[in-house]
Length: 403
Image 1 (cartoon, rainbow, N blue to C red):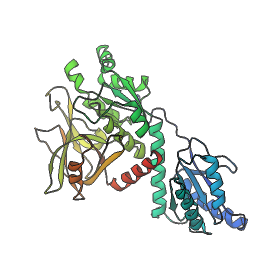
Image 2 (image 1 turned 180 degrees about the vertical axis):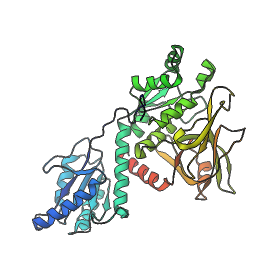
Image 3 (image 1 turned 90 degrees about the horizontal axis):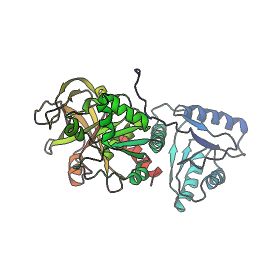
Image 4 (image 1 turned 90 degrees about the vertical axis):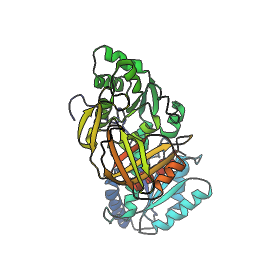
C-alpha cells in the first residue's frame, strides 16, 4: 500500500469469534481429546477458536456457537445458552459432526430452541473432509457474514452533503441506517469539502481529510454540488478511494454506499456503483453506465469529461471481469435486496451514456422482470465474479443476526 493510502475499515478491530465445545463424560477421554483436536485444527482455518474452558459467553456476541462432539450434550448446550441470553432474543449456531451422535444431539437441542421462538440453525461438517465439503463451506460463509456484520456495526459512513434531490429512496435517517445495517451515519456539509479546495487542497486531499478527521470507513458525496460551486467533479477521487479500501459512492446514495461497504467487509474488494441505463427483456440484457469506476476493476481507462455536464473529469474505464454479480438493497426499512448474476457481453463507448459502460446478459430469466416489478431504487452495485449464491447466503445470515 503506497504512502498516504487509507485502510478499511478505518477503526475496526472485531473481537475474535469463539465457540463452546461440549461432550458427554460417558465417552472415553482420549477419544474425545483426539476428536476435539481435529475439530479445533479444522475450524482454525476459518479463524474460529474454542472458548477457554469455563469461560462465559460474551453478552455482546450477536450469535452463540456451540460444538457438541458427542451425544448426551443437550442439557450442557441449554445451560450455556441460558446463561448467555436469558431473554432468548439472539440466535444460536450448532456445529454438528458425524461422530458420537453429535448430529442427533444438535437436532434435539435446536428443535427445543425453535419451540420457544429462539432462532438458530445446525451446520454439519466433517472435520476430516477437505475444503470442498459443502457443510464446511457453509460455515466459512457464515463466519464471513458474521465478521462483515461486526465490521459494519463498528464503522462510520460519511454522508457528505444530503442525498441528491432525485434519490427518493435514500433517506438520510441515521437511526434507520444504524438499526438496519449497523454503521453510524455521520453527516458533514459539502461546504467542508469546498473550504479544503479553496485552501489549495486537491480533491483527493479534501476527501481523505474528511475520512481522517471524522474516522470514516466509507463515504457518499453529493457530488453534483461540486459542479455548480466549483465547476469540477469528484469522479477520479472517488475511484481512488475505492481502490485504497474506502467504499466511496456518488450522489449521497446511502443504500448504494451500504451495499459497497457490505461487499468490502465480506471480501475486501471494491465494487462499482452504476446506473441501469437500458435493458432488453427479449435478450435478458441490461446496460449499466457511470462516470466513475474503481481503477482496480478496469484493464485500462481514459479521462473524459463528465457525461451530463460536459465539464470536469470522468473515467471511461475498460471493465475487466467477464462474470459479474449485481446487487441492490432498499425497501422502507432497508431490509430488502435484489441480486442478479451474468456475464459481460459488451464494454460500450456510447456517447449518450455515462463514460464507463457494460452490458450484462443474465443467467436467470427472472432477474430483469423482478427488477422492473419491484425496484429498490436507481443505482446498482456491480461486483466482479459469480457471487450471487454467496451474497444471498451472507445477506440471509445478516438478516438473522439483525431481525
